[in-house]
Amino acid sequence: MKILQVLTSHDQLGNTGRKTGFWLEEGAAPYFVFRDAGVDLTLASPKGGQPPIDPKSDLPENQTPAMARFKKDETALQAFANTVKLADVKVEDFDTVFYSGGHGPLWDLAESPVSIALLESFYDSGKPIALVCHSPGVLRHVRHRGAPLVKGKHVTGFTNGEEEEVKLTKVVPFLVEDELLRLGAIFEKKANWQPFSITDGRLITGQNPASSTSAALALLELMAMGKAA
Image 1 (cartoon, rainbow, N blue to C red):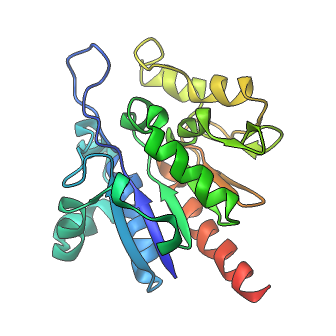
Image 2 (spheres, one colour):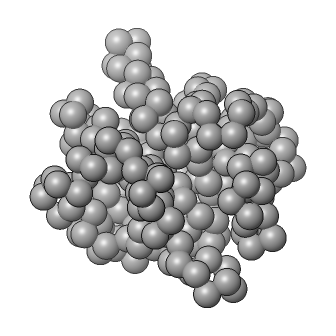
């Protein structure tokens, strides 16, 4: 099985002068879920090379076992330092795609014609797609059969409440929950910061950083079911 894991290249948190990027847990946890399952994994980002890590995601209070493992794992560090350019990725080379979150994707991946075409191509060719935390917002311009891909689908993503707690409601270009609702999705959520992911057909979404592992495992499960079918 070949999985493409996509990370942001965007490192500016709006006009705040602060840095953003991908949330480290959301890069590391799925990476190890896939690697431990023996998956052929390729990492990609819009600019290629080392994607920016949101400095906040690496604060002492946000540490996780996957992050601790990541920092000591030379193979993982090398893989993240050398992501391929998203524009060079061919959908036919992969079975599925997983988008890691953090605030960065709201600026670059959400508006990237390359990313939009990639997600549409994966989905239209019958392949599952998985997105966690802020990355479900990357689906805002993605269409399927002439309608928003998320229309009528059960989804989750970073909630308005979670965005309020991190005090970035006025900084982000759009709120993930509001945007998915506007597009006609059926948005579901658990309490702030609780792990939660949803599978609806070939679309998997996770609510927040704590949902990274469950979303990645759900994707492997869906792929295994597809192989068995």
